[in-house]
Every structure is written in C-alpha cells, then in structure tokens.
Length: 91
Image (cartoon, rainbow, N blue to C red):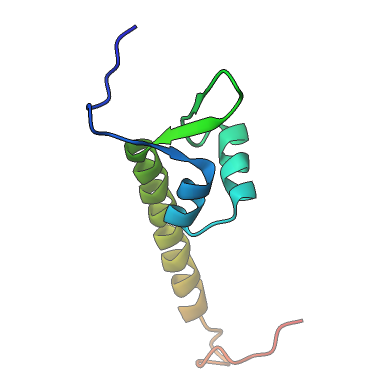
C-alpha cells in the first residue's frame, strides 16, 4: 500500500480540525462516526486527518448551508395575500 500524500503534507489532529472548521472536538467525533470525514487511526488509537479531506467536509457543509439559506429566504418571501409584509405572528 503506497503513500499517496505529498511528502510535505502534514496530518492534522482532531483539535486542529476543530479549530480549522470552527467547531467543537465532539463535532469532529460525530463526523467520524457518521463517516462524513476520512481519518487515519494510529496504533495508539489517535485519529489523524489529511487537510484535503477536511477541506472537502468544509466545502460540502458550506454548500449545504447556502442551500438552506436560499430555501429559508424563499419561504420567508412568500407572504399571505392579506399580509404582504409577512409580519403575521405565528403560533
């Protein structure tokens, strides 16, 4: 099995991934458990991540957030005919 990483590519720890993604370490654990991010486990059990894999997760997450924002903006623009401003209180 070959090493397909570049010679200068450093593996990241969970803490570094959390800082890079601006999330809690527990969130990184959840991503690993859900299979959302690829990681390597050392013989001692430590998880290490390639920067490229982390950037893929960030890109997918930002795309998801952008879609969610577009959907919420579109639904907030839909106002009832009797309330064109959309200011009706909801229960």
